[in-house]
Length: 177
Image (tube, rainbow, N blue to C red):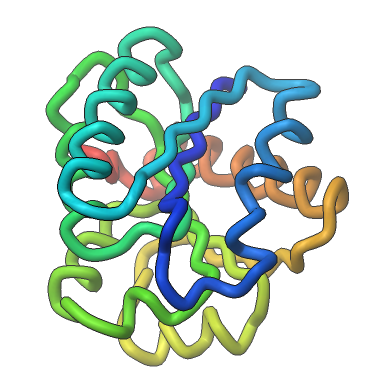
């Protein structure tokens, strides 16, 4: 599988395990899959650089799935727009929620932008339930997978496969369109 992991490196309020999540997950997934990692640094300039790197990754690697972590607000919206505008590939979209960043500010913007995701992964049921109670991720597949490599990576791949199968069957529609 071709996977693009997108990570907000400086997300405020993210627990230590989440901060290291993509750095640990990427190499484990890369043992059996083609993995590209795009980091989103803080600030406007960091976001613009990430958008350029994401465009290049979409064109060069044509990922089947883009998994975004630790990104919210306008950077998340802009990443989704880049995915939509390229037209080169229409990957399935997964979102890793690792903290309360989507609840903190720009609630309406975050709620609307998260509608695009077909899969939502959380390390705890209570964190996921908090978002579901706020009407986030209504049409997405939800999965709770604790942080523990390589167990986490194998469970995550099963969730990715479930998302791709549902998408091919037409159950989720085209979330990036």
